[in-house]
Image 1 (cartoon, rainbow, N blue to C red):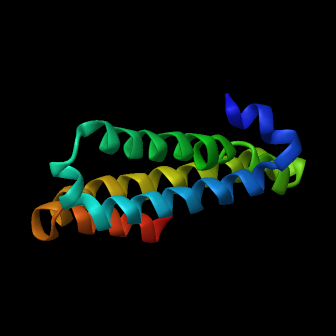
Image 2 (image 1 turned 180 degrees about the vertical axis):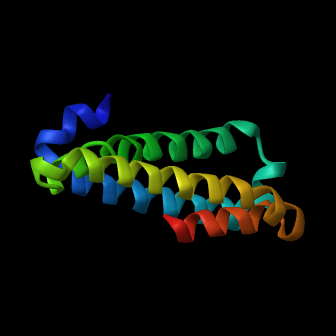
Length: 119
């Protein structure tokens, strides 16, 4: 909802970059302080997680469908929009497939670091 309100004033590219940047910072924060956050009151961990959820929805999730329609010419827009969506789904599949093995081998803090790098 927030992205829809700010789309005209900020533009989809800036919204997407802000979403990735803030998610990366939040994931690095969670990775660095994860052991400490496990012993602190839960609301702080929940707020940090909620912020990652908000900014992933505010930025990349919302603008993924808007940017291809603005970038590609009308004649080939639908085809390339579909190809962009397929590549996004493939990236999600690869990421989801590797989260559990990395978590088992290296721990959740390292998974969060990799998420920050991907952002």
